[in-house]
Length: 102
Image (cartoon, rainbow, N blue to C red; front, side):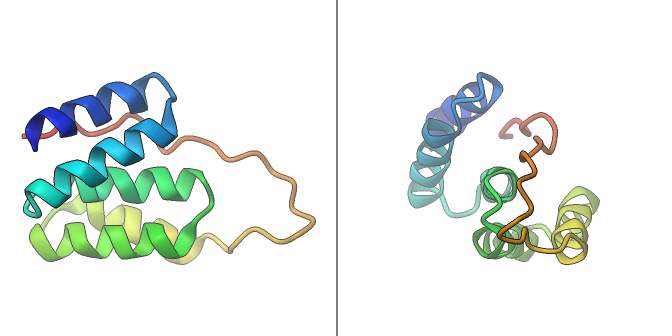
């Protein structure tokens, strides 16, 4: 699971978002306690403007590590940012660097 998590970090760092998502998903399938992978999945889905998926993943991360202030900030950001409209046309921006697994 940790190898998949590290591969996810590498792929995310290279802006290879689909590969990063798949790596993190494989990681949490093997070890569902890797909250950092859930948080990274949330960040990537937010980047792709897939807000519902992002919210679901950050809730999973917080369920595992409720005191993590970064996860709380991500959740708050997802609640505050309105969903993109059909005429929005804005390019998504990255939420920062991926978090490394433990």
